[in-house]
Length: 123
Image (tube, rainbow, N blue to C red):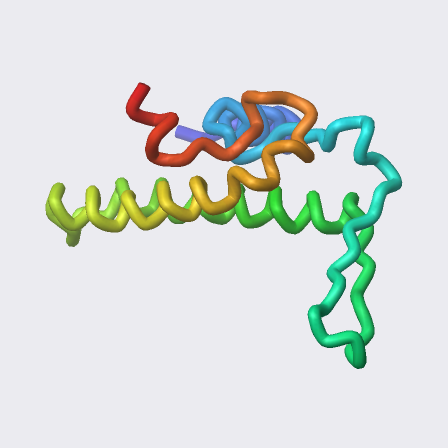
């Protein structure tokens, strides 16, 4: 039985839609009020030079961290080598990371894209 050649564009579209549905892709936008803005890290030592960071670049790094945490969370949940207790323990570390990153929620345009810590998940 011969298989028909598959349309590469159809496959790409299906994979993209599946990843978006799982929350691994999609347009995560920064709030418009932050566009073009900068963050300035001012050292306590006046002899040391500060650092200016474009908020667009900082936002991309934060979104990358969020996406990598989601992948890690998924991999933990799918590991057959771990029992339920071990998975829960590792999951708690991921949740604590999300909680630590809630400081950056102000940068997100949509609330659905924001980080959620442990206390918010229990509600």
